[in-house]
Length: 309
Image (tube, rainbow, N blue to C red; front, side, top):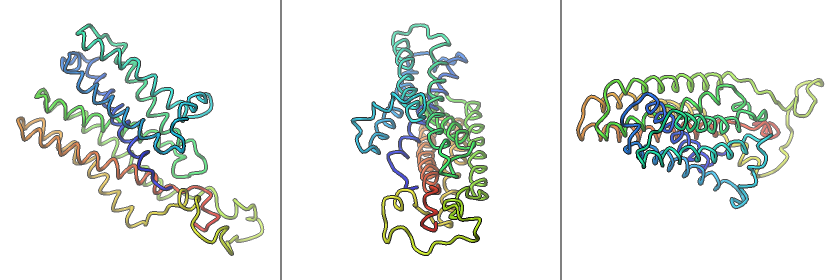
């Protein structure tokens, strides 16, 4: 599939925002002072900015962005509609949370927990938009929702750790959730790519034409003599050697270096720690963009079999 940069930005930025919301909620429920005072407005606000920017960017992929609101009415049957409904619903408890933090009023466990649940539910709905498509073998896998959730939590944990380091309240123990989530996300992505390399296409030229019982089916001529919309959008192909190189870079930048830098930033302190965590966030962003670009670029729609791809 042709990677749309607006969707790449949406899924990575919004995922990191919802992951940050979840990490903030977990620390708030654990009674961490930095997650229950006014200083928690910074991570809460950053999460809101990431989510809002991602949602706005997603509308750029639409032919008529002004009609995006109409998709909300199909929540009974459409994961895209459910994603929109859940994303909007998440703003409610998040704003209540922010208001109570500003007023320095008791938060309680319900509002943070409800915000985190709605955020993760939105990430799951986003993943199901792709995982529910039987016409794309690379997406119609149970690993897709798991990877979306793990990468959201892992990226959110890095952002949360960076904010704690910059605030001077981070400890080496705080790097443990980052390492755990990043390891889980890396293993999940590795398993997905391994499954992808062994995946046999469910649709071939023989099954698409229904002529498989007559013998080997081959194409004498393509349906079109030049590039068209289907080939540009659904027949996008990335070279295997380029994909392998990008996979290694994505894993290194998104799942291996950030937890190591998070640990270094937690124990060093001062301005070196701030620089280290800044580098961790930058590498994380690069790794996530590469991972999500590959997620789209390596997926092939079953319609491409008519073109010999």
